[in-house]
Amino acid sequence: MTTFAILIKSHAPDLPYVERLLASCRRHNRTDIPVYLVVPDEDRAAFAHVENDVTELLADSQFGDQLTRTDVAGFSPGYINQEIIKLCFWETGLAENYLCLDSDAEFIRDFTAADFMADEGTPFTFLSEDARLRAEPEYYNEHWVHRDPRLRRIQAEIGLAESPLLTVHGQAVFSAAVLRSFRDDFLIPRSWDYVAALAIAPYEPTWYSLWLQQSRAIPIIMKEPVFRTFHNAAQHIDFLLADISREDAARAYVGVIVNSNYSRGAGVVDFGSDRVTNLAAYLPEHDLLAAAARSAAARARRLLAPRSSRA
Picture 1 (cartoon, one colour):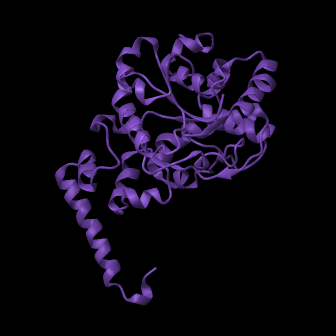
Picture 2 (cartoon, helix red, strand yellow):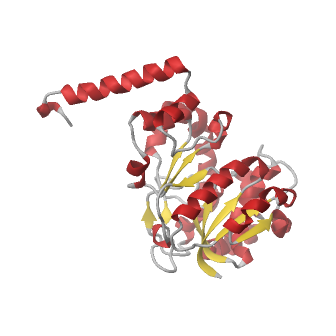
Picture 3 (cartoon, helix red, strand yellow):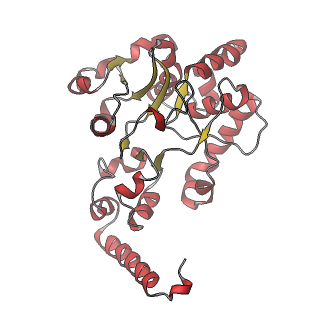
């Protein structure tokens, strides 16, 4: 059993994203952290050409007793099963701690276990109140108003009275010690399995992070998320118009996620592409020119402003 590993759960439609993720991992995984890739049995052939880029290519059937064949909480079996596999991967005995990566993640700088582990045995706990997302109208109306009540339901089931509610969207490090406690001390006494928990609220990082805060199964050493996620086009466009380069972003983040739930129609949007190419993926040409003009005008105003008035 390794102390720390990377877990990627994917399927054939996301193969181009996995290829990009593994390419970025090859460039930046300087200490050869083990990488495990789990895909449906029927998709193994499609992923055969990337098998040399991972420590082991595993099939969903290895977790068969835990998985569902029916919709849960309005989500397809495939969606729920990828959450279950993240929660029960520790039972393979392959890793004591593992970073759960979505296929659309991309590393943007060199990394080691020290970016994710506070010490040899204790992972960082990535937590946030997400104040920025709560304040953003588009995200709030499209996601927050539906997501927050479900997270509060998890909080109530676990019996965690602490406020504010701190959790993480994804790209979390899961500890086998915490998940063993979640299974043995929370699920089993209720005669629940992972499906029963996810039927209440299908947010596996929140089940993990709130149970950790309640159980204190390991020391909580908090750290802000080290992946920057763009949940919608507006967030990515704002980032691009601010002219934040890959090098700039790497000062704050290990990686980025251009969420494929909204960006898939524009293809595999590569964070490393030039700004105009990325903007063009979202905006018609006339909108792109107008946005660029506004950005240039704003920069000009800052440069021409009296020195005393500059922030």
